[in-house]
Length: 230
Image (cartoon, rainbow, N blue to C red; front, side):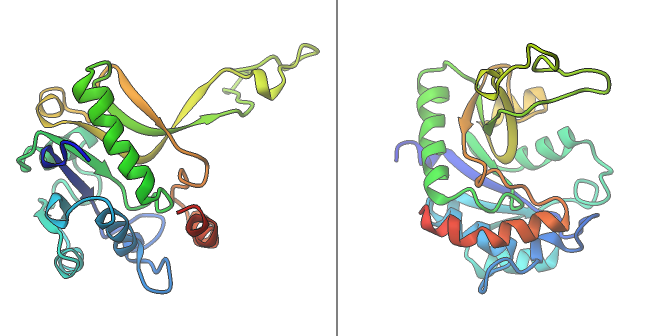
C-alpha cells in the first residue's frame, strides 16, 4: 500500500461512558474487549508504530502498551465529561501528533473489518491526496428509509403518490467508524472533515455503532457474520 509512511491511525478512547460504564473495556469476543478487538483489526492493516491510542486512562495506556501500539496522554480537559468542544478534542489530539495525514478510528464501531480499513486508506490517498478531487474521507452507508421531521416527511411523498423505496433519494449516514484528513487542514479549520469529503461506503453490518447496551448485544451477536465476510 502506498503512502502509509505519511499516515498515522489515531484511536481516541475515553474509559468512562455515560450509557455503558467503561464501554471500551466491555468484553466483546471470547478473547478481547472492545479496545483490544479494534487494535487487532488495525494491526492487520498497518504497522504498530503507526497506531496511537489517545486517552487519559492508565488502564487504556496499559492495554495500548501491551499490544505494542503508541499512546498519547491526553489532558483531562479533553477527556472527561465533555468539558471541551469536539473541535477542541480533535485539534488537541492531532496537534500533538507529527504526521501528514491521519485516520481517526473509533472503537465503538467494531464490525468495520480490516479489509475495509485497508481499502479506505488506499482510497484516501487515491481520491484525496493524489487526485485532489476531495479533501477528506468518512465512512458512510446509504439510507433507504422513510424519514420525517416533526411535521412532515422529508424524503418521500406520504400520500397516494407514495414513493417506493427504490426511488428514495440517496441520504448518506455517517457511520462514525472512520474519518481521514491531513493534519494541517484539520488544525487550521478545527475539524476532521473539509467541504468536499469522499464518502467511503460500508454496509449495515460495518456501520453498527455501540451507543446503548442493546447495540453491544446486537454487535456481539453478529461476530459470526463478520468473520464469514473476512
